[in-house]
Length: 143
Ligand code: UDP
Ligand code: MG
Image (cartoon, rainbow, N blue to C red):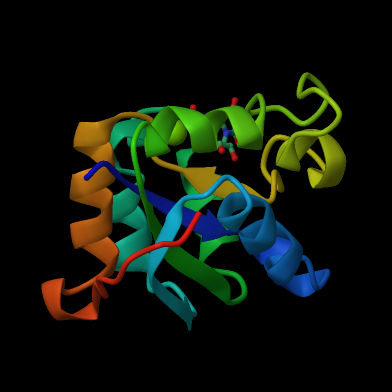
């Protein structure tokens, strides 16, 4: 089944939006199969954002995601990746539609409240970056 890694970024956790965000994703009928709160170490942040290593915003991105605790979770389901990306909205909250997580809660392009995997392949890889295989729980999601 398709997997997506989501991260409730520091601005989401700090403003008490974790439950609201997870609730929106659960509301899509997707199955929550792993969850934890953590303060991300620099090494983990650099691995997670390695694709952006050469971008001008890379250092700020790593600084921000390591600045305060986040919540990492795995959601599984058919078309989980694209359905979650749609629910998140555009990367820049100023461009994101109302009704999307970033459109409703994002503060700016850095503090855009949520990370979500951008393809099934990155979904699987990102889940492995944040979770051990034994952390993933299986059960029947009743829709
Ligand atoms: N980002 C940024 N400045 C930019 C583009 C992206 O600070 O010009 C940040 C933003 O927080 C984004 C993250 O870098 O969520 C990763 O960028 P990506 O293009 O992968 O966007 P996403 O997949 O999160 O929509
Ligand atoms: Mg991305």
